[in-house]
Image 1: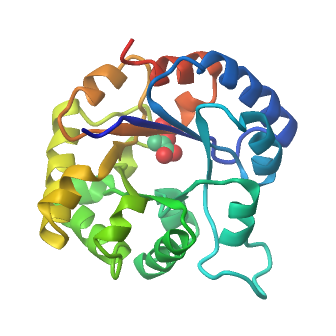
Image 2: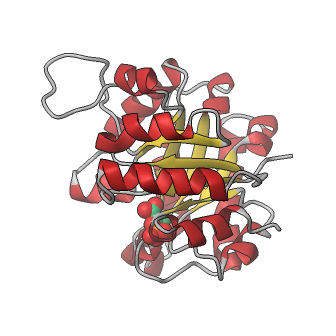
Length: 250
Ligand code: PEP
């Protein structure tokens, strides 16, 4: 049985002091939630937020990390630094990193492997653009990103991978894939994992949906057989909406 995993990606929002105040509210408001919960503040806010959520039922996520452990990489953040701060998971391959910062499948794969090597969970994002969907290529694109992003990740290491299916056209746009359309792709991705690994790995892997998830649509999305959680941007930035998402099953 896969446990639902709800994660908030705060992106480049909230200063460290705002993030601390917000995290304090969330710790109180989410204390009775029985879903697995993660918040991913900006890199600048990781350390103070780590202090706030220590001992709570919320795990700390980062939004990105470098593809190498250390060295001359001005402006980058190392996996070793994230671990030292108490980060447990890292979002990798987000469509904004792919589109704005030109991250390739190969770079994302290096980051995924490095995160796993150091015991972090990789929240590995995949998803098609509107153009690709309209050309009937949604599945092919997701399969290709999956294969390349998980290259040389072993079946045992898949315990440290969460897949986030995020159709690019649904991110921050208010447009959500219908639960049925999202389910169809989730099922196909699980099939791809079975083909790459085994039925056992495919049954275990958590596949989150992301793209304008909000309190009004979360229940229908989570009711789908192959949707195991959500990676949430906009609606994770308010206590009330993130609490409603975390408690969608109550
Ligand atoms: C995201 O950033 O991963 C995301 C899904 O954003 P939003 O929920 O705002 O669409």
